[in-house]
Image 1 (spheres, rainbow, N blue to C red):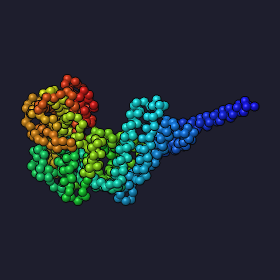
Image 2: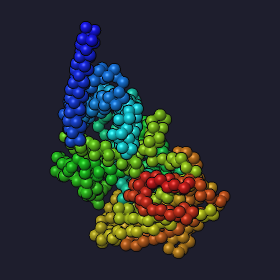
Image 3: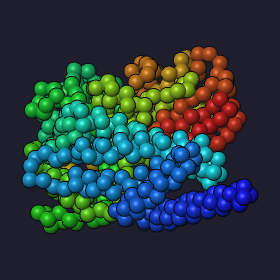
Image 4: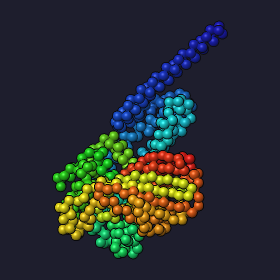
Length: 566
């Protein structure tokens, strides 16, 4: 009898265990299938269906979590990942809603729901990574590259969460500098137009556009000009708004903009944004051709500059044509945004990320909290380095023309214990202007444009390395330095030397800058090679104590100390 009872108990336990396994297998299989379907929709950028399937997949994972007493870290990671996907559709909806035109002047860019969802996604993704790191099964499934990407994504989400929180709590009075790198300046390019806009607790106003020459007359001048501006641009009349984008460190130029516009009709500006023509072109490439209804024009990436400067030869003081074009273009782009697919939105995010890293989109804020965030994330166009020394070779076109579009350069840097040489070879592929173009320039004194396409470059070398002397030789001839001064940067003061380089059309010029340090250099020293905003990726050849390398400088690069980081 006892044996029968014992056998009966074993049968019951076996059946219970079998039932448990069946239930566990059923819910596991259901969660797995729904998760795979969700991921498949996610890869196809169908966020609505991906989120719906993820929400369905969450409840069987919750059942499994109860059945396993929540002990499996892989299961916790799984559920956290599903929660992230389940919120993506709401993010997409909020972004598209914020892009819709309203009948009011203000447009809500950052809604409470958008911020809430981003905050939740950031938290869930952090949990996903934390549990994945604690799960042997998850670590087996994830490659090192995937782990690295996940950590980077988690960091980006944390940054985005902080930024949305800040913008939803504060008011920014912003001035956008629309820069054209075809007329290169140290801050990215000549600022032909300005746009003033407010971002008030996440609500954006319609921008007001200004032609730089029209607005400069109301902004006045600062009493002192940098040496290069004074000699070649301002005729010793002080620093005008047209030439403020000169300083090697963008934060210094931004402060001068704030000083100049203080007594104009603009509110007190606390945020300056440098926006390049190249960035706008890439935006148009992503969203497709933009139709301007009022002016009956279609804007493509390759005709943007031509249309913006259409009839420029007939320019006169007070001309409103470019302002009207920019206003219409902004409105047309805004109308296109709600119609973009998820893939295009992701491409836009990549465009802005790349242009920030390449300094085609740079920011400054007089609010210390926001400015520190900008600097910490390399978005400020400031000279900010973590190495022993830095070296910067900014160019500025003082020829009053748009020659830089067809100017290229190659740069060689050589470091020895007693000498540093920077060899820059400039190539100017521009053709001379036709007689008709020259006559049109002569007929319009308001045009303020040179009668040639030669590259007149005010070249500077800037470093925090103490040095005894500098020598410059261009095409075998000694060049007299225009200045040897001390300037302010974000982190420290630095020495700056400047000189003029003239590169005629269809010609090249090779300049060698040699600097002799005050103390002997050591190979263990590390350097930051600073990238200039507005320049295309530039070939750099490095000879660092006979350790040779070559790369395209598309962001600040670290060299020396036994390791080069590009």
